[in-house]
Length: 537
Ligand code: ACM
Image 1 (cartoon, helix red, strand yellow):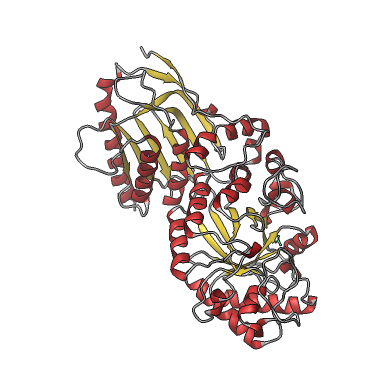
Image 2: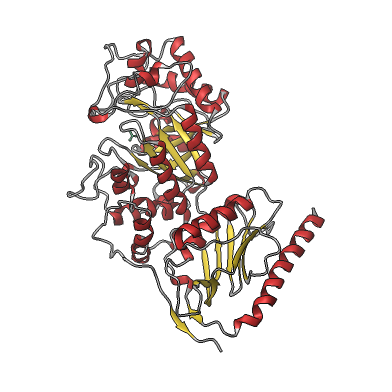
């Protein structure tokens, strides 16, 4: 072990020394920009930033190197190169040997430093001739390169030299997430969203260091995932959506592709099959499941709380076992979400019996159960997780049971709430949530002891949105604020400072063709940041 560290350190040191020595000669002619790393509009705000007021000159003579034998590091380097190519049209080689045109390096280094105290922690050192990202794991390195992506200006500063240079402000960033779970939920049941739409959402979330996408895969209006042992779920239950459009579903191959794409971005997919309520689409497909005493019919409206599984039939639990087994087998993440909300036509004793049994099924298939806050009224284990959306009383019950809580209060964190009375999409049963209200609250002080908080999630229900543009209108810019609420410590969060940094996201959002809501509370910037330049002696 010691030997490996020494060899790695020697290699690392020699790479850096070689490049510094090589570029010493050329430095004399370089004109340095005056920068302030602490003023760059990074979101989420890093833990600690120390500017050194100079810059790394990113140009055609830059190369990326990564720790070679550390799993995933080279892929992180390639991801960075691809994103920089898209952003500034510069081709940066990754781990190419023997090139004599390289003058500056970006080194993505696997480090065993004890200062990196979580898998997602990273350190970013930006010097004139080298950028070094230290991380314990490739996940930490991936979070670190998101910060670097935000630091690279869109425009090159052609006044600095004959060739194009993109000055990256120098200094040091030490960073580590406040919460391990930083999520968004997408309801693909009320309206279906294609694999391509979901991938675009994943890309945008990953840029802001969000690491969980919870997919709400079933509801009264639609069943959206292929279950091979119960094919009518998608044939019949997947055929509709709110408003009478034609629905849709993911084949298991589609779902695996979403999971793979998310994993490449160090994001966990959490599948949700909502039950025993919100089950009309399943019951239309297989009427023996139904427990509300009526003949189930396809439903394209927006009411909730009218459906329930029959909680007493063994065949219902055999069905659920198949569904949980098939989905768990293609879900590498540790969680399975069973819904459990708004089961208004399930008797309370039946509800408790049902959740108790379903929790055991989820555990049998190797997953940790998550449920909306109502599940805490059942006899659930401390290892299960409650997602607090509505009831403080249920959240307190979950705490009493020793459960971890995902903080998603509808009044603050629901992305489908309208911004204001003029909003084009959304609902307002919980609140109007303008961009400032979405940001100005403190999950750490919302009534749950800190040790019970797993993290924060912003759900996006889709009754009123049916395409990616409408999804983006509700999600952006608010989701960017939720990323900061869950990554940055509360001492680093401040609305006045945040709203300026948010304004600076406009060029990125425009470049990504994101149809964000241009909230009048924000003085949106239309161009990327530039630097004053000074001659270096
Ligand atoms: C919910 O909004 N029904 C969890």
